[in-house]
Length: 190
Figure 1: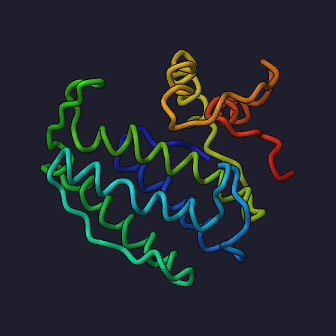
Figure 2: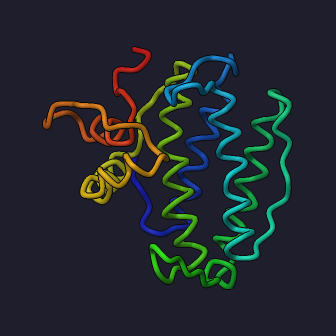
Figure 3: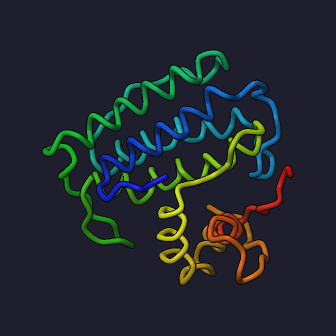
């Protein structure tokens, strides 16, 4: 599984992988790795948090999607993905400027890529585990994300966005090291 080299194609790949897992969920109430979450919560989280970020910081309004009907979650995911993909495929929209106190000047494409697309990939593991599906993530994504995030391990753990790092051997597969870094036990649910 290769990992594309630009934000629009990375989102397309991540969204498609997640969509496959969404369509494979048989029990939306099945426990998921983030403590207190179920399969439904994983999908709803990804549907709901990005509109606030894009609306507040970039003035981009995303259409509301229905999250109260489990049978419609796959359609809601498809709707959200198409909308985000449309922004990324539009050069003018993708180049919209955003300034963050912490990260400096970024484009809309960078914001989506760095924060949302990465979140989609990591939550693909959560949804796969919750629903008993293939949890394999793109190896290049895992390698790049682990290399970029590992030096910030303490900051990530203290951010409240991730759980405490789970100990794994130094020679564990990179996917396991990444999952452990974000506070998930790579053996969860096995």
